[in-house]
Image (cartoon, rainbow, N blue to C red; front, side, top):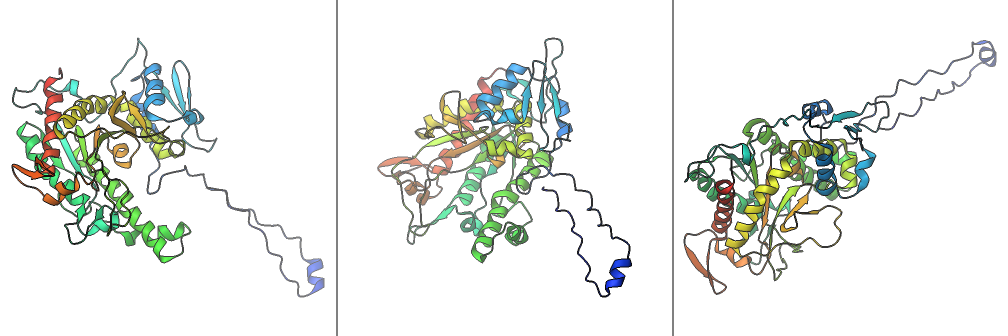
Amino acid sequence: MRNPAPIIATATLGVFAIFLLLRPEKTDPQPPPAPAPQPDLSILAEPPDWPALAAYQHTITRSDFEKLLTEIFTTDDTWRTYISLSDHSAEILTSTDPSEPPFILEFATPAKTLQPPRTWQSTGSLPSPPPDQALANLHIAIDPGHIGGEWAKIEGRWFQIGSAKPVIEGDMTLRVAEILKPLLEAMGAKVSLVRSTNQPVTPLRPENFTRLAEADSLSDPASLRLFAEKLFYRTAEIRARAKLVNETIQPDLVLCLHFNAEAWGDPAQPELVPRTHFHILLNGAYTSDEIHLADQRFAMLEKLLQRTHEEEALVSETVARTFAEISGLPPYIYQGEGANFRPVNANPFLWARNLLANRLYDCPVIYMEPYVMNSNIDYPRFQAGDYEGLREINGQHRPSIYREYATALATGLANHYSRMER
């Protein structure tokens, strides 16, 4: 925050010249002390608790820290503005205010290596499961992406062709979650749904953000409304889900369920594309603008130090391979030199991106992006709805797309946890 402008004394209009000549010389009042600068933050974010990183002292070597930082969590060298490395420690800027002391992270050494604190269990820390209970002792949270229902049009995850059934992502992800939950439970997992209805988790609504929209120098009613709506469904809703996940559910793994889409234009006359694909997103690839924000810089470091990436990559490798085999979907390939994405382990199905959900959830997150809602390959399957068994669609006998999604994901998780040494 910029320092307030000095208070300028206003000259008093004189009434009598003699009074002005004889009155004591006036001293201008001093400006009030400048408030302490606030860190640059993402919208609706709280200032980070930098001392909390002290729990990660001596838990990571310099080489591992630098490798993760440069190969997964950042996209360029901007991090060097905020993080200085020596052989023994990392000096991390906590504020753009030079009077604020940096946080010093001490690296692990052969003489002193500690385990990072965390609320989740890694694959390697789980006890061996019974033969038919591959997911025993595992707590999984399922987060059906978006909201759906009456909120679908506001979210922009809705389209309809003529009088056909509308395609609503929030409704579809919830249906997948309802099918997936008993499949995981049958394999021994404890399963929690982050949402179980087509209503927001947050108690806030778009009208709660009108003043914030006005403060953003927006003037016309349409822009104000759109800005307030985005703060509701894109920011406040995800932050409310993160609070629920981190403070109440506290799972070992979160499955964020989504359906992908390509630009469809007018939702009343959407364009269908002749392709479909699949990929999984892991947290990473923080841009220079994101690292500048104190809350995102803190979250990046906390993710890195918790070692969530290693677990996300480990689980996702098997899930991606199994999902592709069952669904037949090809990988989605990000094109060009990405400013906001990075490939992971040279696996065409795995990509790192910094999304609000996979950043704020304090555990490994498998962020699913299969199928294409406005694909002329997948659209007939969405129109067919959910059903048991097989139906002929586009000349092929196919299961319900929702059951295929749930079965492929559940099978991928079972393959991972049953085959890994614990």
